[in-house]
Amino acid sequence: MHITLLFADQCAAASATTHWAFAELFRKRYPDVRMDERQNLCEDNRLMTSGGASAAMELITLRLEKAKHLLESTRMSLDSITFKVGYADSNSFRRLFQQRVGLLPAAYRKKFQPA
Image (cartoon, rainbow, N blue to C red):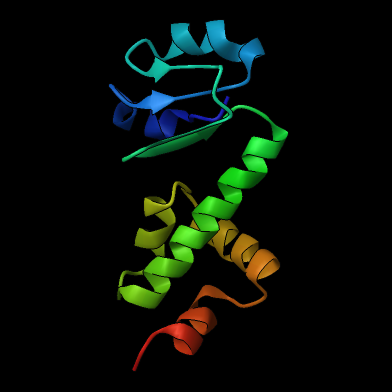
């Protein structure tokens, strides 16, 4: 399931998706979330969810692109950016960012943020 209890209170009235095999459990666990398992990817202002492996990879890419944009265009802290793009732990997000982008977030910001 792609929504964690940490974010459950923020998901009320949000749009989301999951793999069809988890649809019934999802509806029971999160009755206030508008869920459509026919979608592979669902983006709401507060939440991005995916319904399968390829959609999950796309979701990671979208989150990283949003983080890159925020690093380039804001002075938000990494913790704030991590939370904004849908991750709870900035240390694991930092490792993912470096693995996928090739730079740590701070180095990326230094390289690409206008002076």
